[in-house]
Length: 300
View 1 (tube, rainbow, N blue to C red):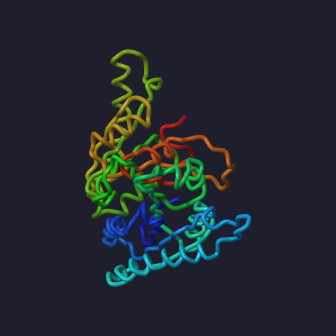
View 2: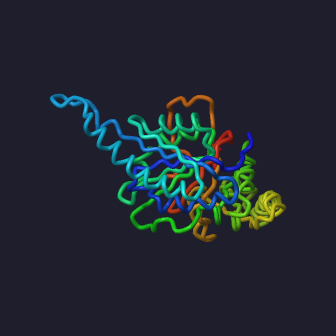
View 3: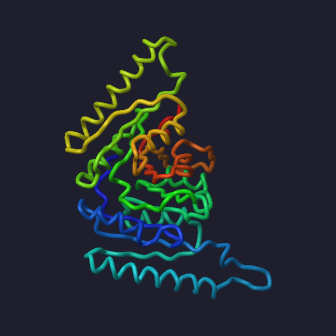
């Protein structure tokens, strides 16, 4: 499965998390192929659900719809002036189901979803929800987490991505995606995290052999990027994958963490927190989950 250019972007917002200031950072993608933005606002069922003595809160639904519509009209007018196409969905229901429906109907190439500074990502999209999106959507999903001690985005996340690889099937799609953003990506850091138990032997010679083997594979990946005039550097870290990827993102001053995510035809509802989900919930920079690999990077 190849990953083509981003022509159509789905922007999932509750307004207090992702605003128009954040969306504007992604408009740089017009330099490659972006031409259409689709907005999605999902009204949570518990805000309008049937209650004894009150019934279904139809008036509240109308109020929330109109409030969202006013925001989107304002945003759309600005985008129209810039020659962009715009679509809008304001719905009531389950967020994941509505995202999947919009992706299918619109042929979305990239989903952007976030969370407010006051609430963790798990409050908007729980770990099991992220896992379900990874399994079921064909589009890459970019999650933006705004913990209280982090600043809001001030640059396009694609400027300086950190790509975490574990040599899994489907990871080529990550490179295809980044190659489609030539002219926007300023430099890529490519990392492999070797677990301590995977090191060959206990001698310094054995450890160095592992490092050299992994670095050689990473340099081959960097070669693919550099062949398209995208600068790239290889890095080998050793330890627990989540901790080391966070460390590498700080060391490299990365604007984005990119990792492969598993995709299956059906999601069985069973959830265990995988590395991509953990990163999406905890990373201080945005995380791009690219579907196509058969298992999550860094996992056995």
